[in-house]
Picture 1 (cartoon, protein in one colour):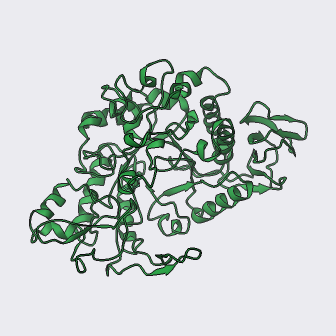
Picture 2: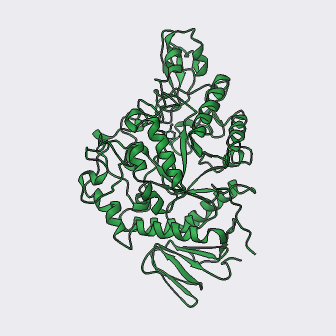
Picture 3: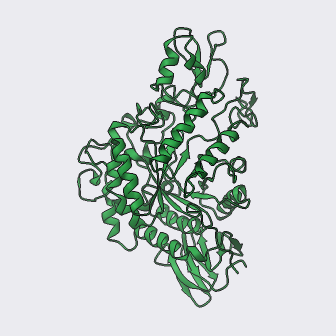
Length: 527
Ligand code: NOJ
């Protein structure tokens, strides 16, 4: 007998990540906005997702496109007003769609009133809400580096002290050991939950507390080059105190009916078990970014399954997001990349757990080329172009093939669209039965149709080299990673095929190169 999956609303849900700036522009200023998202809810409903995750829409100087928050209680004027947020929530809920919002607790913007007050005088009490420290002979207080390049410290204010920023200098890190910080975030969370948010995606969830002694990271010679590099196993983040904060947030989330949900931006499977717990966070991302290889994908899937599946949690399968190169490109680009992306979606989204679709995944968008002078990512700016940055996966959505700017906006979009971008548009793909969009619609509808009969567990079944096969109750999923067609001894009704060449006759499933299939079987493969 299959054990049914316990049904909290978020368990096994499919979420769609909206990168607010690039989704849909309602006021034609070239930048996406909240009313633009509301106007596309029918699209999201017809795609078959259960909810959306909105990237930060708060008032912000946009130095990291919203991940630099100046006011946690409002809406960036370029994205709309609070009324627009309320309307978006109301209309999403009317359609049965949940709305997760992004919370950025690790750092504020340097334009946040707390930081402005902190810089106003060396004695201002707000300084203790951040990490200010004395330099060492004109150099930063320690050797910590910013994730965006360069030292994690910048000198500011009359006293010549340095402040810590693990990201851009315009994103000063908060000092969570000062009680005013957790107290304020409790208020912020409650404010948005009371406004109707169904949960939070927590930015940089493991970094809130830093090593208290601010000790230098030990350096060791690199294995090959001999250059000094930071020694592994010396954590400046991931400190024990953070768990008390998350226990408090979980309690708050549980005070709402139905329960609200906490999703940690935690990719490292080794860290996930400490955070994804019945009294802390509900879920974290299982981003599969390996080369297209059966053994690598199998081990990545297993690592994430075992990281969180201790009784109550399941992985949140993800192929792309706004920080990584789009997976069609990662998987080889062009036709091959798209074939593999289709197969990958079937392979991953049949697994027990939640799914995250990044906007444009369902269109098979590739990483776009953004000319160097048009790049805006602080990662590009801080590394002086040595890092190509993340603009290529943030180019706005193409909605209509033959409209200016592919129907995103009548104004030139904030990031330029490469030639031919409109060919991937929603309207063009909706007309084709073999498009990525049509496959995603079928995939999500089939998943939803089977949901009640799918257990929370899966089992790998024997498979030829370069193929993976697993069973999950009545569902068998098979994927061919190789460049050659494969014949598998599998009988069942073909529910879904990633390519028209997939056939299932009698005991034989034929998979063309880079393809996958869902079969309905009486006996689960692997059982
Ligand atoms: C993770 C976000 O996803 C990324 O876009 C941002 O730059 C950093 N956190 C800093 O907030």
